[in-house]
Length: 370
Image 1 (cartoon, helix red, strand yellow):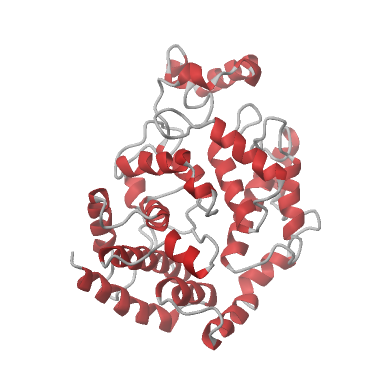
Image 2 (cartoon, rainbow, N blue to C red):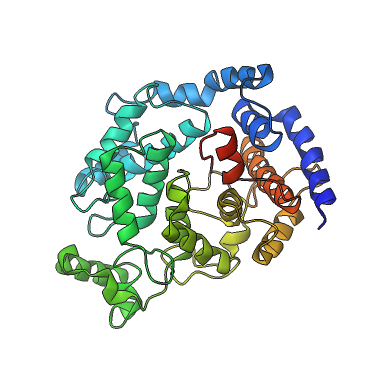
């Protein structure tokens, strides 16, 4: 598709979205797509509207002083029967709510946000990773990428504990360019573990323990597409870290496998996950991949993006916007539309040879947005 056609889509859809958007969506539409300066009166007013956004206020009001949020009695009891946080819904809820608060332009010193980030870091192991939330027996690499994204998003990139988490993730980087979940995806890939039931396999993991685990013993197993995407998304929250060769290799790993089936039933095996539009995107999707890739500088000079960009354009509705695949939702559809427009705007800029994504934002002094 020609640049003029993509620009026409961006302009028309942006006008439509601007008319109906909630404050946080409007902020990103104005700054990321329409290029408006944050000092402009309209943008300043939108930021004020973000501060008064009801969902943001509710999340801050319901936060406990220790940085957690209330969870259901059933989930509390389940945590109590196990090893307790960070394994369980307390940690998951923290990450998800921090994700939302960041989208709503919340600062680290509002409410108990700093306490929440400190609690996450209090769970860090000597090796550098943060355990849980799915298991106490092996680290969920994708959740560590998720945690890294939130820590960087709230400005903790220089903290020594965050750097330790970065070091662990880099240590877990694999020769094929990606990442996976230790034990669950590499050890289980090989016989006799691949034929075991999950309870039997977990019993074996408990017996083995992490002390005898060497990632290099299992490099024959392929990396996980979605684990890789989550880790790269974490690194991509930093201009500095996004330039690391391991991060570039990770981006290449999932770009080369766009629309392909994942190797592991434990994490989005079906290729349908690529083409499902959803929000929030906690664990990656085709939309999330394009957001990361175009921000990192992948554009029209890379032919691998042609089909994904054509797919994204094909999902545009008659009203000029994008909608959740499973069930349209007035607010979530706005977020999906804004991300789609940001992607297409970057791609259009690349077609014209203009700075886009990370390079453009460095020039104007913005923070990494993906």
